Length: 344
Image (cartoon, rainbow, N blue to C red; front, top):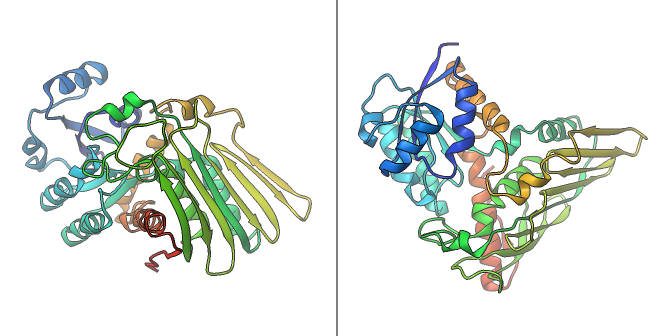
């Protein structure tokens, strides 16, 4: 496989695991240029990682040797950047969420599709060994038919986190805990259980934070086959706990706690994957994880380009989490059950 030449757009909080993963993949992926509109961020990035920086976005978009870009900027900037990158013929790896609204998210996908470039989305938790193992046992039918599918995301964020300009606002971030923290967990749940038929949801801002959007949300799910479940998400849970996904089937139960899977089957067999103690500290810290999952995601993205296939996580897949969030928030506002959009 030839070396993939990439540019990085955005050198803020999200860049660290990407940069570390790119250094680990230096034999397969070459960073040609990295850009931030802030000179101090460019200098800090260059000093820390020894990777080249440029002082304009156009320097990346106009470089015909660059095959792909990583867009790691705030959500509200995604659509315009994707349009520019797509017009320049660059494949795109985009940080979640797709953008701040489902309408804009759909336009992101359309821009890449119309330009004929690959669009991959950064949901790195899909690459955890435990997540891959759970997906495999589901594909084998070892849990039987699902009768319950639930998820919890208990994060902690201080008020200073939301005091940063735009943080937790509709205009920049597109929402609160659902769109910015729990979206990883929602994506995982949907990848395992599929899209629910309807939700009854509740969302609010707790007394812990002063912010525009929700820091606390919960809902009941109902699936087309009769299965039910719950979702709970917050940034109020000090000091932060690993995410939890629980699937109950007619043949067994599987529980995914962070990077650890435990499954028990009615035939007397069981399966465990991952360290039950791993990741607990990471869930208590912002960006407290390593780069290994980003390395797997970037490796898949490079292979997708080389093999002319779709990345493991496409824009269309990521859109399902947006649809679910829309339904939860609409249900909360209107006090009724809401049908989740089915894009099948």
